[in-house]
Length: 155
Image (cartoon, rainbow, N blue to C red; front, side, top):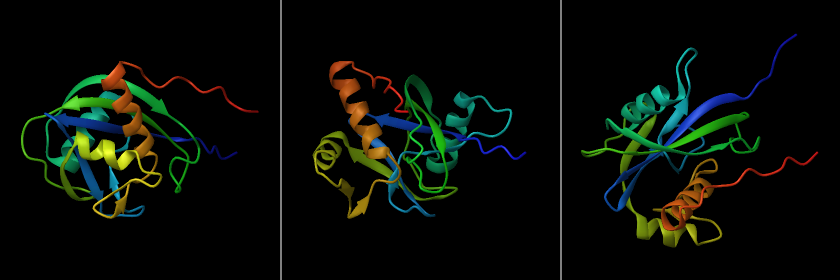
């Protein structure tokens, strides 16, 4: 019997002052995204987040908090993934690496404006996966201290 389980991933919201670091994806699905990726077998999710941030942005991050776990089966069009999302801080200038064509700062105020639109885009590129929702949740968290709440499964 072949098991078809969701793949564990991590995403990292890296804050530098009043900016958030995003990457421009080099591979499909294209667009801007939070740094992140797949958890390797035998790797704790915290170590995966630190590794993925370094690989994709060149930044050594300090993890701050666990924001939430996102598991909607439609969050990644390629396959069912479960993402553990951390907040982090880092110093230095981000640079794209691994499967990130580019890494750069986006001011929080600009992100707020873009995320208020029905189809948020940055520099004409959409946000990949469910990262617009994750960033909306993050802004609510830093503004009001409110984390996302579990949604009851429909079934």
